[in-house]
Image (cartoon, rainbow over all chains, first blue to last red; front, side, top):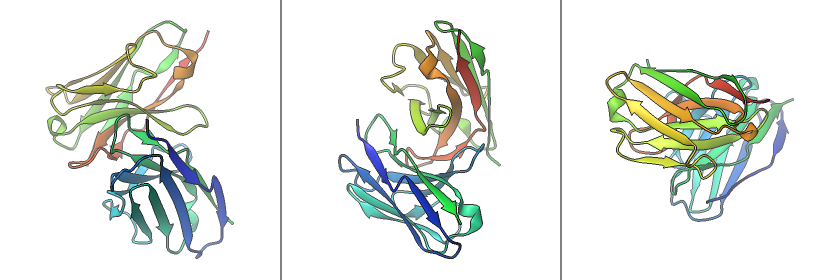
Length: 107
Length: 119
């Protein structure tokens, strides 16, 4: 099973700041990685797949990069509504696995 | 628009069974693989099972293999999860999720249904 490790666990940022979230895989994924945003009481929402392809309707401030085992989700200018937990997910190997999540708090 | 509506959750005793359903609308259900993903209270996301667009291929997490069965009825646009021999660590919100056309990432999720396994 591929282990996905996200860092940091929690991030506290001010509106307008640039935010970088990391996700590391225990084996190479090529570019088969997705990012999700989950707000309290809601289902996850797809932000990025194939490591860098924005999902439909996702604001341009969200971008993804990386290949192999190291991936990054960047929020170029964080907004108050971006307060959420962010998960990465690999789909290069079965079983599909998720990272443990990074909680982004807005000051 | 795409809608996924889960049902069938509830409170059950350990060792018993439960069947979840997910009614799909707003897209060509028979053209997409579908999955179940769960989330224990206060925890992260945990993939459970996948079924191919036509039901010919199924895959399970080791934690549920032999106890859970994923199935679909394309004539009813409905996904199912039969859960047997339930354990306390199966307690979670269960989401059905639609895969994208080209990846096994999930572009639409249901609202989830809570399964609580407790004596």
